[in-house]
Length: 314
Image (tube, rainbow, N blue to C red; front, top):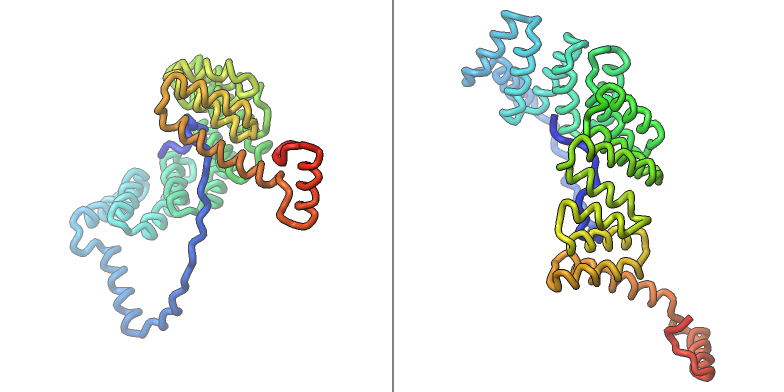
């Protein structure tokens, strides 16, 4: 299964750029004529029959000869997918999952195809039904339900699925990392840090778990920087810490971390980008706090000048 584990990897900048795209709508297509409909049906039948595709014909013959061979059915579905016929592939994955309801391979293939088709709701339903029905459900299925629940903002329910995954496979660094990330989303940084440490104990090379541990330890920047320094250079560690602090709107602390990064590497790209972002954010905050160019604002500034108070002071 494609690696779908949620993580907060090394943060170089947390700035985003929202874009609005103008959407144009093409005129509705004209209804297909009887001839077009017939041709489309014939083309589809030809594809199903494997005309011009020797490998496809062999796969279909294998399925016909061994209808209880789940592997043959999955190979047929994969062949359709590889040829760009994703709708036919999905149909065959559904058929395989229905005919072999206890097959982990069939369920996994169907879920993967559904996620590629952006049908994540249906994919989650397939996983939930399989986990509730079959004792053969692997830990990864429970974890993936948790991930999909996290994506929907159902963090408390997602935690139950992540914990169920860890109960079934307690020696998995990845699963402990996923549970830790869920706890981080719930604002439970201390509990999250404990899970990230368990993940690192199982796999000391896991950069994802160590990065997430740094985020969980953000309340203590020194400890977080030490966690990052274990996998990267000092400048990057301080720049990462700055990015987390910027996200938390702790601008003064962020500026100190950026300066520390630049002391180590004056041309560090991520640190310079974070510095630019911080300057923009603080500039906007100062502009929002300044009196507007209205009569009331001008009077307030005149009073400040009369009292000898700097217009930028509070």
